[in-house]
Length: 154
Image 1: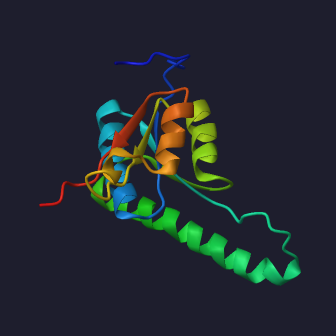
Image 2 (image 1 turned 30 degrees about the vertical axis):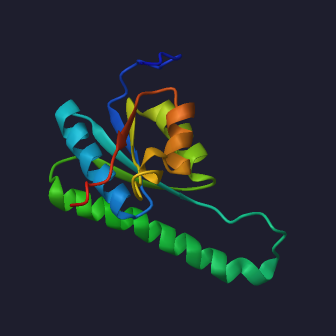
């Protein structure tokens, strides 16, 4: 059964996709790029990172910087791989700080026409469940959400 909510249907010319560098996310990025080409849209690749708040002090500055650098590498790798596979496609990579699902829909809801995200199936029962980020995006986004399932295992 389809669920109709307050969808924002203004055309913005952007397909947004969330990535964490995983195989499922890489598949979603590729699908989102194909969708952007079909629509004649720009592709926005989003990755977000965060450090749980547990009262850290200056002793954590270096590790936090290293985490941010590693997070930027996730974005850069996704952008470069997509540029190679889809030459001519306009692509923007964006690194955000904060909870992944929340940050992805904040950006997607204001800047994109559709948001694409991968899911992770881990077996017969758990494959029925979405990852926490994809579930959050699916239930909170104001724009259409396209969930990309993992490749079926043989």
